[in-house]
View 1 (cartoon, one colour):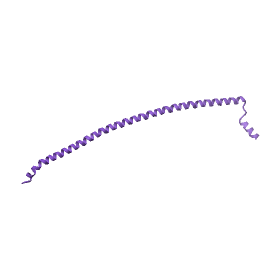
View 2 (cartoon, one colour):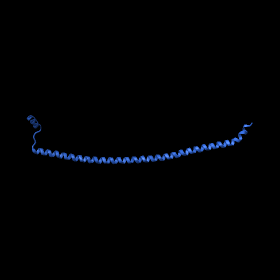
View 3 (cartoon, rainbow, N blue to C red):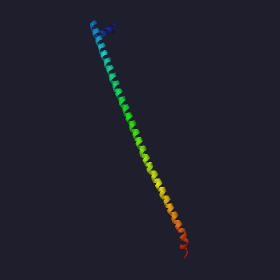
View 4 (cartoon, helix red, strand yellow):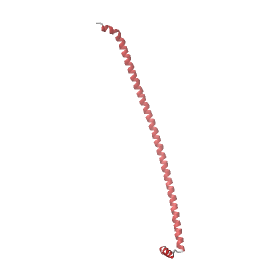
Length: 120
């Protein structure tokens, strides 16, 4: 057992009481500095996080507005297209009815003439 103590005392020479106090206060000072630096880093991180969250909120709001504007624009465009399609359908129906009316008129005019055309 005494050999182990001797071996330890050779590796770590005994310190004088003043040296131990100095080392202890130095370590405490270093710890205090490290704690302060950690606090400062946490504050900086918190500030950065807050700024990034705010920036993210603004980006989300901008994207929502852009999406809403695009949706509104597409709805307006769709309404215009539907008006054009409706107009085309009604025009086509009108033309078809006119053609039928002309065929009816033509047939009505031909009915009295047909017997005369058949008789030789």
